Amino acid sequence: MDRLSSLEIVELVNGEDRTVAEAVARERVPVARAIELAVDAFRSGGRLIYVGAGTSGRLGVLDASEMPPTFGTDPQMVQGVIAGGLEALVRAREGAEDRADEGAEAMDEREVGPADFVLGIATSGTTPFVHGALLRARGRGARTGLLLCTRPSPELVARHDVVISPLVGPEVITGSTRMKAGTATKLVLNTISTGAMVRIGKVFGNLMVDLQVNSRKLRDRGERILADTLGVGRSEAADLLVRSGGHVKTALVMGALGLDRSEARTRLDEVDGVVSELIGDPEGRS
Image 1 (spheres, helix red, strand yellow):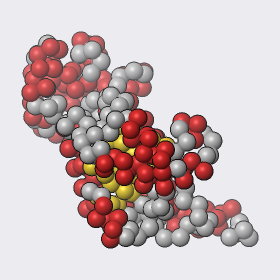
Image 2 (cartoon, rainbow, N blue to C red):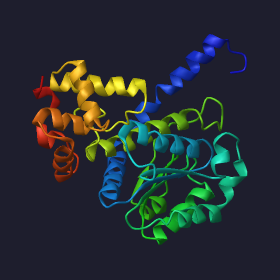
Image 3 (cartoon, rainbow, N blue to C red):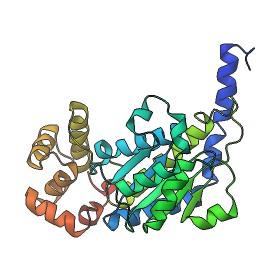
Image 4 (tube, rainbow, N blue to C red):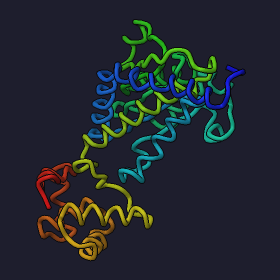
């Protein structure tokens, strides 16, 4: 590899990357199971907690951090725990992954319990920090899962509520799991968190109706969702968004049913926030 041209390196890496999606697709059943476990946790007032070290931990923290701006969730609802703490996000602390006791302590600190779903991320499948966390989480009554990129043992499969194992094969650079294994991890986490948010009513059709309207770009997106879905002009959409308190989902119900903000929120609470239960599908509007 070290004698290849830049273009040849691109072609080699890209060729290997194309196999990752297929490896993830072969794990679609356990990924769907993980979505259901996350949904059960949310509906019980619990949390989805990712636990990992190194690249795996960073990807878990990344996915968790994207939930509040995208879906308007409480930051505690989806959490990422990384071996070595927040400092490990920007500076590698490889030795931290060997501390099973610190993984267990992280679960105690978060008071993990029966309502929670804890998903360990360990591409090698052997990270002590992750296994320490999962052991303690199960001891505290939580449901647990493991995402790895090697073939799991029968004992590992039996131990957890779900095991996801996209087998991506050897890395282009031997042992560099930030590459194919990292890409597979990102794809799986994207699917789990997105699927769970869809299932609990954070999406209307394919629209992010629970996004946080806290920037010019997101306010524009919120207004466009309202205008397109309700068939109104941008000025009316902007007014609805203001009167809703900046909450697109509430504004949709207000505009579709002619309600004030309080009544719209009450009606949404009655259907667990699923907009289509109140106003039908977006394709049938406008």
